[in-house]
Image 1 (cartoon, one colour):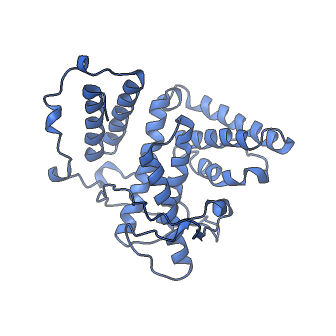
Image 2 (spheres, rainbow, N blue to C red; image 1 turned 120 degrees about the vertical axis):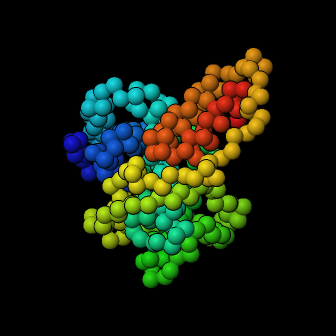
Image 3 (cartoon, rainbow, N blue to C red; image 1 turned 30 degrees about the vertical axis):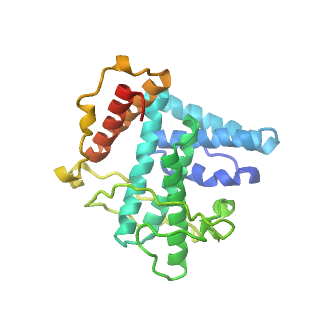
Length: 302
């Protein structure tokens, strides 16, 4: 158990949910907990690293990071950024897919709201590895908007509309994000925004614990496990597995593609994503990422 932090300075109020997520995952997934704290540390340094209360808080947070790093030892998700990035992204997207599956099925509850919101926070933390991909930016925006929309509907006794819906005239107001009470703003109309086109796996056997510790003005606790035991996953049927691009069978050798070190790093990242997906027996995601890696290595393009 990490040593408790001092009271959160007002300057760091925007980080309270990331730090709470870190605390929730101390035992559930220490790697996720570590990167939530690292994101909070890096962001806090940019906000205020000079005032006495902020310096004291950051110093204690750094102690927590060092303790976690020592605890995790030679864990590849800590020692290798590509593995760590794949771990956090895979965890966030699994949580997103769980919430999206519940949403599309019309099973609205506080746990799925919290799953949407926590997924958006974890996608924030990917910033420690570099710029977010456009896909992850869209997933984050959609998850945060969905969490707000469903949370407000449930709070007002209204029935939310299931699945992807138009967002014209309504946008998540991130200025109020740290206050635990989300709101909408009409300042911009994201009419050009399209909800992310994501697969909707048919998860079965998910057990959702009650959200007993959630503050009254925030979504309920996220389920203690967003993954599912292997015997509870509905194995994909062959027609759900993406077809292999025929052009890849006759792909030319690497000599015809001028690959940069960044290309090799991205290809390695796709392979790591595929490996992580296979841990969850998610064949669809594994095949998609392996195809991306193969295309990049043989053509030099994604």
